[in-house]
Amino acid sequence: MVKKICCIGAGYVGGPAMAVMAQKCPSIEVAVVDVSRPRIDAWNSDRLPVHEPGLYAVVRACRGRNLSFSSDVDRHVADADIVFVSVNTPTKSRGLGAGLAADLAYWESAARMVASAASRSATNGESKSKIVVEKSSVPVRTAEAMERILLAHGGGEGDDAAFHVVSNPEFFSEGTAMRDLLCPDRVLIGGRDRDAVRALVDVYAHWVPEDRIVTTTSLCSAELSKLAANAFLAQRVTSANAISALCEAVGADVSDVSRAVAMDRRVGGGAFLNAGVGFGGPGFHRDVLRLAYACDCNGLPEAAEYWRQVVAVNEYQKSRFVRRVVSSMFGTVAGKKVAVLGFAFKKGVADTRESPAVDVCRGLLGDRAHVSMYDPAVSEKQILRDTAGKVRVARDAYEAAEGAHGLCVLTEWEEFRTLDYRRIFDGMQRPAFVFDGRNVVDVGKLREIGFVVYSVGKPLDPWLKGLPAVA
Image: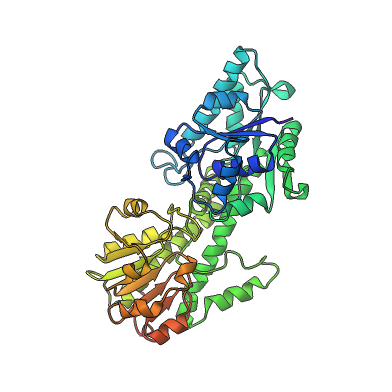
């Protein structure tokens, strides 16, 4: 019976996942460990390092009961029956596979940490078999590499193995993590050892119906499923965005097209078919390129190129938006104030990793615009870091838009739907432009107020029809 669980890595995945596990398994002691003391201190404070609706309430209820956050990695790893490895796996910035392959330095360090802690326990006569769970988003066959590392440290083989490696990728979305963790579409567990897989199934069965717990004897299948899921979702977004460009050219409405497509049961619903300025976040871009890299490494260049095009069209959508802004404002934004509403990659999060807003701002700054920024969740420090300090951060949307020539909506925060746009219009230069990258504004009402409105994939404003799409 599982009594103690340890998770190495107190980041976006490890913290929320273990908090829910502690809440739903009150008889199991759950420890989240990390070598970063400031991160652990944040988890033990009232200002958690991860911004997720509902997370703090769960952490506060479980912390000090059966959930702990600690930098004493060795002790908690040695005591645990199950060790989750949920460390960062960034994309390599240099060397072989730079820009595509995962940098597995943190992951390998964690694997060696598990082996070392277990070896010390064995020396003290406290040896017991451990289940090591791969939780990070990793390339295919990473679990097999982990098995080799553990075996090299005296892990043994077969039924007498000191370690049993299991792959259990996480599928929750930032912004809805608690809902997704509490009521997951599926929990995927891959592993060769039937007892190890069963032990993890029993943990999840505390709150997840067993028909939603999918098991496989293949570690590779579980790992590839994570990459494929993100790639398929990214592909849907990219398909809608590619159609949005044609909609603008012919006068169609991308919302009508997407709705009609989504009604086809073969497509599987309308999720991720909303056109916009481009997808963002840490998962889609990274995992699509890792899938392409895996295809390349296995002699499948045509498949690799297919997946690379998903990312290429996403980059095109962002640059197309910037070109539309510049061309609409008489071919230049140099010296003009442009207000940007939204910097997070989507509503409900404070995460700016791979956010389309970052690239749009860089494009506007490259044309020498004066950018004023407002986001209700992203800190001023983060905004300035991502823009090299070249934007002005406003306290609210009205301050950001005061005196602006144009306004760009780049995150679909609900408050941007209900702003007093008459007040904003009165404070802007004429003509006053709104560039809606998320289709959140009421185009008709804004045009009645007097705005020139561009909304992705929508019929063009009469003002724009005679202007080129590219500056």
